[in-house]
Picture 1 (cartoon, helix red, strand yellow):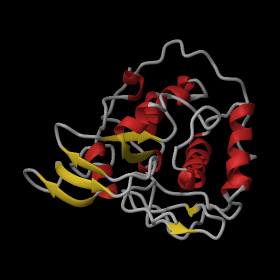
Picture 2 (cartoon, rainbow, N blue to C red):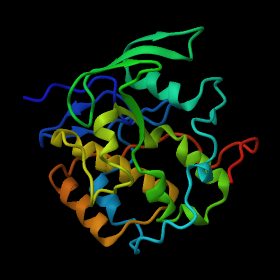
Picture 3 (cartoon, rainbow, N blue to C red):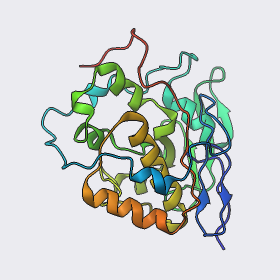
Amino acid sequence: MTRPRGGAAIAVAVLVAVTGCRAEQTEGASGPAKGGTGGAALAAVDSLTVKGRAPKTGYSRERFGTAWADTDSNSCDTRDDILKRDLKKVRFTGGSCRVSYGLLDPDPYSGKDVTYRRGRSQVDIDHVVALSDAWQKGAKYWDPSKRIALANDPLNLIAVDASTNRGKGDGDAATWLPPDKSYRCAYVAAQVAVKKKYGLWVTAAERSAMRKVLAGCPGQKLPTGGNPTKAPERFRAR
């Protein structure tokens, strides 16, 4: 029997659905709407535009702004916001922003418990929709403020085991899924939500993979909320 997820999640407490997949979480760091108001994730897949993957030419992390910018203006950087949201037994250094310790109990991608210690962390903050993948599926043509917003949106961020995450690279649902199969419904639903929110397209293989996963949990809700799709004007990207 799979034990329930702890704090690590795309949004709020995870419930075990009768299908064996977890009901998607819907409350992120910025207080998105509760109650699964986004509708069924499976139905939302068909609303996504299908196109081929564009070249990666011109991509760099800097195209999405400085890493972990405080776009929600709460005086904490985005990385610490997500650590506070997703870890248990959190401790801070010098106030209530800089997370110095916490437990990922369990990691949503692998199912194992991981300890976070600042400076020697085994925890990554993953972009559920990888920034390189986004670049190749529409973000290349956006205004920089929209790219900055995507890179710092709690809807697209989750604390995960670093070693597991490194195997993902910039893969989409057709090329990479969490090793812990019980989390795949929630993971794919989150990707659908992010791509729908930002108007990113999917490849035919990616849409097929999304449908295949979500067909096993047709009641999976589409997570909602997160930050606005335009970052404040004070932030800049190349």
